[in-house]
Length: 398
Length: 149
Image (tube, rainbow over all chains, first blue to last red; front, side, top):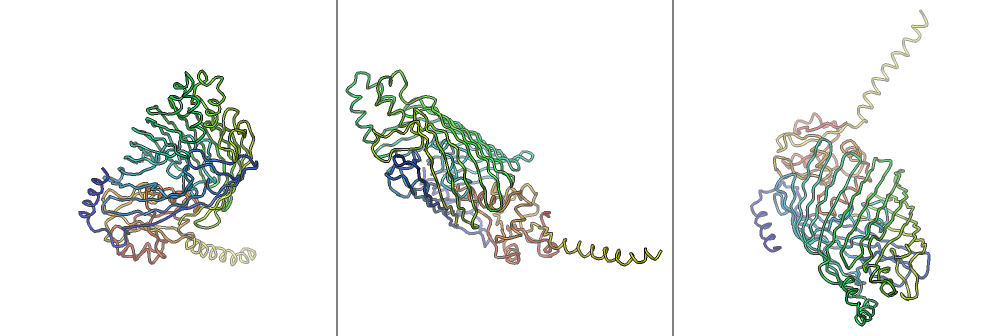
């Protein structure tokens, strides 16, 4: 598939009429964040669940720091290739770079763009710019919403259709493909037959987003604790049924998101709701956030509220009842929490922003929220705790 | 009688100063225009199309000519251009374009060194579109597509 597309692109390039003299055929650019996040407690660390591996410190550089390089290549006419390579801390606890974008795009008409290759899973309003913190007011998009879907890379095709009705810009964005993510230690998860549709509307200062997708989920946990639990469950008569809820192949999932952004040069308002439904292996949950910011010269102070709640645990109550180890498994994979944060973005330089955010989080009684023990997992309580975090970052684009 | 004479001279001065001020503000209230080469491929451009192009929401016009969109370096003219055309302030525009670029959706306009460099690029590239200060309005080698104020 990819080879054939490349051949097509080269053919298109050869037949294209010579472009204007000053149109560059290759453009290179980059973005980066150097960030640190600290928790006020010694026994817990902040964790971007599904994105990074837990460490052993309460101050972490790996949660937000990221570096990306991108090349855009005009192949002639209306065909373009984009390659973006990105490095950040992975669930495998390394910084191995990956191709976050590698696609060919073809625009048969001004309104249509057809793309194939490595794209982004556009699950959220800000999925496309999840790693480009410079584009956002916060140190990072609120984890209460953005942890609900860790799948970032879409290997497949999509179509962007843009039109203008009156003074409203409309974008329809159907997509199809598959995606994979690593899970801590040797685990992995994949989405196949992933298909979805996004609708974007913008008018003046207001932008609206609606998205829906479905996929089949296959998942294997690979951490040592799960290995011990699995071994214990295999010895129980009903253990097989419990394990079948925890991991395996062919769970059906759906994902919904809706959001808005308002920016009138004085006030900045952002809100988003997202929900995931899964028939197994991960919990069903929903989350929302609301941010209010005020532009004052080069600074934008903001306040945000966020909440994520579990709708269905991985292993249902009927099966997990009386089994503390299974309840602990459910809790460790439940990111439910609520938080209030206050922060500041300072556009210190044309291409750089400095940010600081203080957050107070209350982890739900049946979940771990966005936190993980720094030491022994079994003896550290994470649930029902109130935790302060301080995040500082510098974002650049070049 | 004599009192009105005494006030005649100041009134004249007020009129003269007002006229001068009108000229002066006419010069500094940098009205901008979007232009292409007189014999360029782009014959017309609506305000909607201009806004969509400079927000990366479209990359071509109906004529399908490869377009070269021009920007001026960061500064007063550029900030004012985006404010007039899109209503966005400089930091909003930078954040917006970083999102467009790094999601692979669009490439930003090519940055000219200054207005006269932008004029040179317009003349050398048949598909080039750029914005210039209003005193380029009478330049015989340019075709004015839009006035922004």
